[in-house]
Image (cartoon, rainbow, N blue to C red; front, side, top):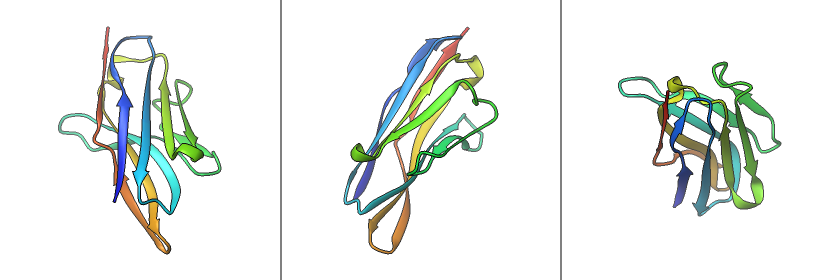
Amino acid sequence: QVHLVESGGGLAQAGGSLGLSCVASGSIFAMNAMAWYRQGPGQQRELVAAINPNGHTNYANSVRGRFTISRDNARNATYLQMNALRPEDTDTYYCHAKIAPGWGTILDYWGQGTQVTVSL
């Protein structure tokens, strides 16, 4: 069984910074792409940033230049550094990973979600 455990988040003022961490553990044969999504009440989950095993990154237009995604392949971890936060960044943030629990199989896994709240 594979688990994604998130940490970080919390409360910040507009213009401030927060960091999120996500570590995958369990029966892992190989790690593929990792990403961060966010979702507000009654809204669809949207991609914030993604990173593949080679370090290539992709960002939503709304966060490009403010957020930075990174990963540590040795620790099966991904991180999201969020700078210049805005109130509209307030959401629940979810870690996502495509993981091979065994040879020939790649599955989608999600973290439990962590709240980020940005105040004026």
